Image (cartoon, one colour):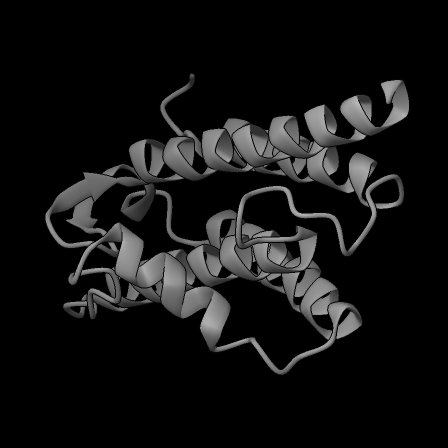
Length: 158
């Protein structure tokens, strides 16, 4: 990675998103990927984390102390990201999923270069930096995409 990690991180964010998007037309929207989650809940969940990262980065860029939406724990935040979108239809959640990643990428792209290498408070509390934070969520989305791909493959071979 060069001194400015942003171009590589943006590319990785885009590739992770493309991996998930490549499976959305193949998966049955009502099929459970996890015991309580269909693809709808997975997209809501990923969107919620993008929201948290955006809020954290906005505070960092402005020199403010961010809130820590996941301070009660990852599981509590995961449940919250899904429950707050419970009444929304799939198309709405899909649009949010696309829009929040676009906002995140634009924010990373336009943030001052010096902020991209400084430490700041991450959504669950504690300190981290931009590469470390985004790496977590890049891998997170890829893991979910792999789980969706496995469901599709298993359904095709059944």
